[in-house]
Amino acid sequence: MDKKLFLAPSMGCCDLFDFAHQVEVIDARADFLHIDIKDGNYVKTYSIGPDFMASLAPHVSAPMDAHLMVRHPQWIVEECAKAGAAYITPHTDCIESDAFITFNKIISLGCKAGVALNPAASLEAIRPYLHLLSKVTIMIVDAGYAGQRVIEQMYSKIRTLASMRQDQGLDFLIEADGSMNADVYRPLYEAGADIVVLGSPALWSKDPDIEKAWGIMQSEIDSALEDAVRP
Ligand code: ZN
Image (tube, rainbow, N blue to C red; front, side):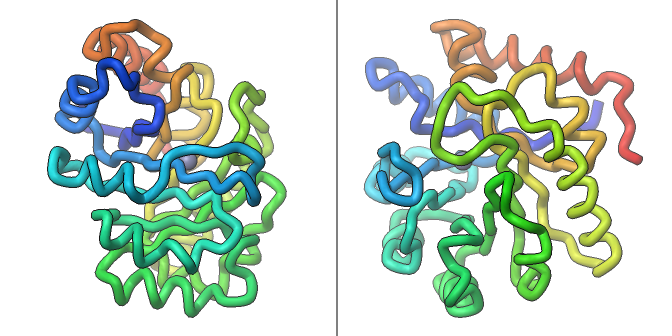
């Protein structure tokens, strides 16, 4: 079966006491390594930063994507690029006043530009700079907080984005992020998502042994997508 969804585990979820092993297992299987960076301001929670990516960089080959849940992303874009990010993904409402400067800076640093939209953010906001983007991340819950229910309206947002992409002849990837679980792979894929971000409920909580956990997650995806079709 051809791969239908690319997988982007959120590496901050790795078990610190089994870290090197989990990174090795995941890097050999994942399509992207998703790095969730939270500043305690744009979202009221904290997490890892660019130094985490810099530590991973010599040990991984999958492309790292810095998802910046950060109020002023311009200040760490350069640090993320230096740390080895392949993609840098700020949020729409953190770059409203300097979107073009931010994306051009990301691109000039040799990285691919992504953008993330919280559930309440409008797709119209990204229309002017869609052509600069390699990836658009649709948050299917509010960014930064664990344990939320997936907002089903986001399937139609992804569908709309997929048709914007087609109408404009663009090729950016569409990523779905937040509270990922076995119930949503199929509707996300059918709506037009290319990448799913995997957090603890989708991967790590399946089994303490990361190889077993990966196998369980993969078979959940395979059975969810078995006869799924893109519109
Ligand atoms: Zn994320």
